[in-house]
Every structure is written in structure tokens, then in C-alpha cells.
Length: 273
Image (cartoon, helix red, strand yellow):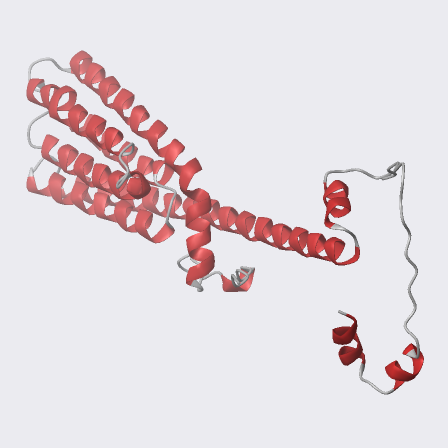
């Protein structure tokens, strides 16, 4: 007989990592979020493809002489990588690891932007692009608070190292850039924490409601025939059936009063059953 699944509660939720302390509800939560999050992930990949193409158009409009390589990489290898990652979400082994695919995309795109500092001007466009990457991390990867947060800060470090190594910004500008990245990451962490907290509270509430429904069903079945209990569950309120013929049996146990007085209640129930 299968053991009943333990019901999660607010106290079972780790306030720091926003994961259930018990692996069983954590596994159940991940399974419940798989299909909706997978749909959002695929939409997000397609959105990244469109945004990547839009940035290429803006680059072509702002400067035509010194960013040909960047535009070629953006519309060529970078776009191919994004589409390949999108296609991998339809494979049997990787569709359940869509968050890992997005983490790879975020790091890959951060490295691409970091390299862009050394090849193209104006750098303000790529600074704005990096901010877009950081925001996208928290919007497009709202799957796990810890994983997304680490990805966001890793992208920020890559941005700062890229700007400093390429000498594209002065020391003062790098400091301002770092403060902007810190601010964006902090705001993203706060928003992500609230989103994940509400998601998990919703899961807890749905699990409690499901458990109460199961108890209600068990109670109905214990006092009514299962067919009648099922009809009540379907919403029938006045149940009256016609039978052309029926047999009614009345039975009495001789000496039941004396027998019940000499035995414990649980023994009598077992005997009657």
C-alpha cells in the first residue's frame, strides 16, 4: 500500500533558499512546475532570438564602420546557439533541464557582450545590453532562487571583468558600471524572491486543498456506497433512484447487548466487520 505523501507547510519552506526542507514536497513541486515552466522557457528563448536581432538592427543604425564583426557574430553564431538551445528543450533528456540551458545561455551571452567591449563603439550600447542580460536572467529564469541569483551575479562579474580588460571604460566609469550592475541584481533578487515565495505558497495551499478533498472523499465512502459518494462529488444534491424490484433485509444479533458489554468497543467493531 502506497504511503500517503507528506503535506508541505509554510514552516517546511527554507526562508533563505526557498526550497522545501523535505525532499518529497520539493520533488512534487518541481514536477508540478515542469510543464508550465517549460512552456515559458520556450517562449523566452524565442523572445531572446527576436531581441538579439533587434540589437543587430540598432547597431547597424548607430554605427556601420566598426561593428561589422559584432553584427556578424550576433546574427550568425550567437543566433545559432540560441536556436540550438531552444531546440534542445524538445529533446527527451534535456527538456527537464531547461533551467540549465538558460543558465548556459546567460553566461554565453554575457561573455559575448564582454568581448564586444574590445571591438565596437559606442560602449553605451553594450552597457545597456548587459543590463538587459541581467534583467533577462531574473525574468526568464525564475525557476530556482539560488541558481538564478548565482547566474545573475556571475554575469555581472563577467561584465565588469570584460569592461576592465578591454580598457573600454575609465576606472571611474567601471565603478559606476559596477554599481549599476549591483543595483540591477539587488532589485532582481528581491523580485525573484517574491515570485518564488508566492509560487511555493500557492503550491502549499493547493496541496492542502487536495489533502482535504481526499479526506472528504474517504469520509463519504466510509458512510455511503461508493457510487453514491461519487455522485455527490460530481455535484448531485438530490439523489433518488427508482427500482422496479427490491429486497430489504432486517437483521438482529441475539444477545448483542450482553456481548457488547463484555468486550471493548474496538473488539466489537472488528467482530462486526
